[in-house]
Image (cartoon, rainbow, N blue to C red; front, side, top):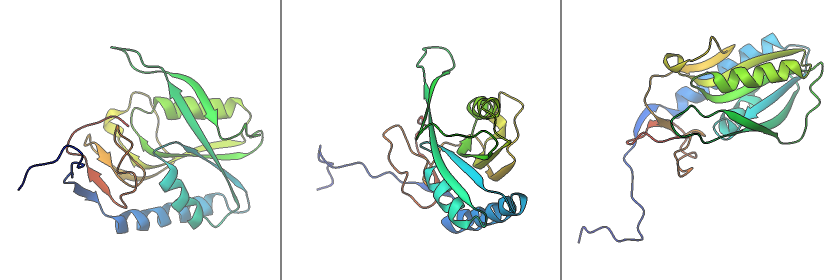
Length: 187
């Protein structure tokens, strides 16, 4: 019997786009470059949740400089027919970043609007420096003139899941590679 029962989850067929081995190799290369740039300094790594949490974990383990890990979660308004805008920003705790070197960690930079807003906010709070590292850079979707200081891979408009990136249901974040989602969904 080939009938799908009501309570059985659908199994998605995922097309691998970037292999786990490629990701790990690139993360180590990024960590080496960041470590060289911050030699003799402490870095405050600030991950943008949820897409950056796995990338952040692997990246900071590979850094060869002292690092403080923190998390930030932008909360967006839901506006029909218009672009969502940031309403609030939640830190894991209110960090004292005055005079600190901040490394903003993103899983994917798409339009660049959120990253640019966060970087400007961190500078206004008195950070000594603010740099952006992202695993994935979708330059074709950029709405602002923003270039990450460090990036892993340039990607096209394919909706990707895995390695921390999830679908609407928040699933598939645990896949160790990046895959094309069969149906475009929001993160």
